[in-house]
Length: 268
Image 1 (cartoon, rainbow, N blue to C red):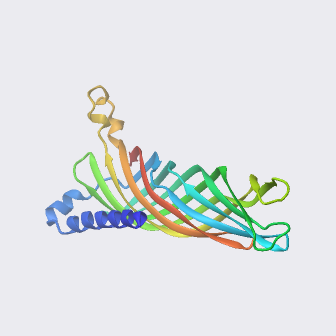
Image 2: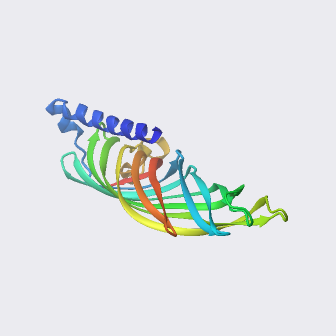
Image 3: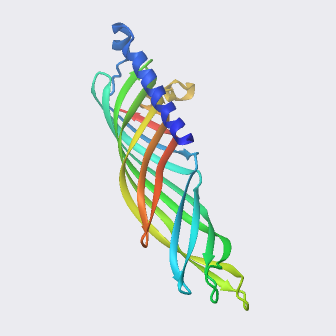
């Protein structure tokens, strides 16, 4: 539910800014058209929201079926992001960005193991699988509407498709220790990890606020080249999902989320 609200808010904000701009008088529209053709950027930031998913694995044991469930929580993590945008005509442009996300997280394991002597009398245990890794590499194609409010302030809204490759560590097996006769108790003793990778197509939308103010700082005003270098803040939401497989058991995994990044801008 929270992910949907973030997506809706980003979309409404982007549409609101664009609609308000398009409805402005012609004089304002002419002033708002940027002069630079190419903007390059490199950002670092954070993905604050967490995601959860679960996977269940069934296995044979003592002429019955045992199972375990792994509950994963992908916590917040760092983002590296960079790209190029090209102004095609007036305020309309296109962009190509690449982003990378990484998070190390645990999974909570709950298991049921059949009894070696009695049917329908499973033993249960719980444990934690730590040090699991999620990596996401995204290539984002963006259609942009760019607004230049002053010679130093530019705001753009964008959206488009994203190609996302996800690599996820999944728990593929668990190990238990029998506590001895009458074998009615077991202890979680470890796990096996399988790294899975899959690529999917998703969506992205965002707003980028850039300020070219370095040359206005008194002790830097003598450097004319700083007029082309600025700092920016990018708020982007990426959405996608992939189906991963552990043995014969499928797991649906959501990707992306809100990304907040900041860094340098170079305009040409």
